[in-house]
Amino acid sequence: MEAIILVGGFGIRLRPLTLATPKALLPLANVPMLERLVRSLPKRVTKVALAVHHQADAITAHFAAIDCGCEVITVPETEPLGTGGAMRNCREHVTGTALVFNGDIVSSLDIEAMLEQHRATGALGTLALWEVDDPSRYGVAELDGNAIIGFQEKPAAGEERSRLINAGTYLLEPKAFEMIPAGRKVSVEREIFTQLAGAGLHGFPFAGSWIDAGTPESYLAANAMLLEREATAAHPGASVRGNALIAADAEIASSIVGPDTVIGPGVSLDRCVVRRSVLLAGASATGAVIEDCILGPGVVVDSDRSRMVLAAEGELRF
Ligand code: GDD
Ligand code: MG
Image (cartoon, rainbow, N blue to C red):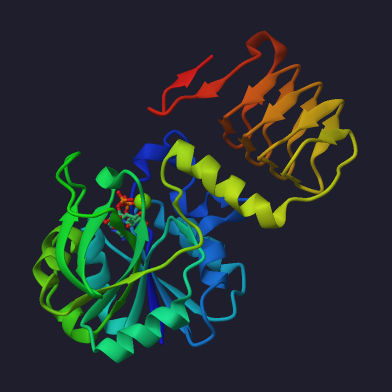
């Protein structure tokens, strides 16, 4: 079976982090999010097509240097083709039912169980669905049994017909691919899922965990979620509080780290308190309180600028 992973977006909501690093290569608990996804694929997936555009070279180079246990190719777009156009552009690499992912999702979805339902219903497409309180930043599916009878992409507040959202993982038959117009920008959500609703599109609601790591808040939340399983116990120079993951080569002196904090490789901390934050590779801080922050690679926080916040709007405040 082949998988397609959509990773060509600009990652605008994660700027400035995504100016230098594609969203797909931003680490979650110190492993690039796309690498995590590729390594977690079921064994039956033998080939993965990465639909790339923005910062494509960095993604290609990353996968050329590692072995994820399956063939990984990159399929570039000269112009961004949107989620549907990008999938259509990978059509020649798909031989049967395709597994398609948005590249910024962390979840506990059981793909084998989803595939079982997909086969049993004979659906043209099956979408994994996740329940949220506020569906307005997502695609929304209206179900009748397992059949999706209505699909709304990012409905205005109050307009949503359910709280079940498109979780960004699909099983699609070749016939569904053929419905996507070739050679132009297409939103699979707005043009195809709306058309397939009531005509062969099914939903697979699941429970457990799910996060789209594409905003500063949800990026921090995705890291915190992974720490529940991947936290480490101790590190020289650090007094660890709650869940934290500290890269082995981080240099830490007289600092409190945690809860819900990830310290990347090559980070140095001296007399700091770091809570609910992610410090990417090579960041360093002296005499600072760092809370609810993402420090980009190599960012320096010194005691003259003792508090730095990456606000929700992506604006940097000192
Ligand atoms: N190759 C390629 N080309 N990839 C793209 C393009 C493109 O033009 N545009 C977006 N992508 C990729 C992004 O990199 C991301 O991995 C994925 O497609 C989804 O794009 P996002 O920008 O993250 O979309 P979203 O989070 O606003 O909404 C989508 O995901 C939600 C779940 O997280 C939609 O699919 C919603 O319906 C869904 O609920
Ligand atoms: Mg997203």
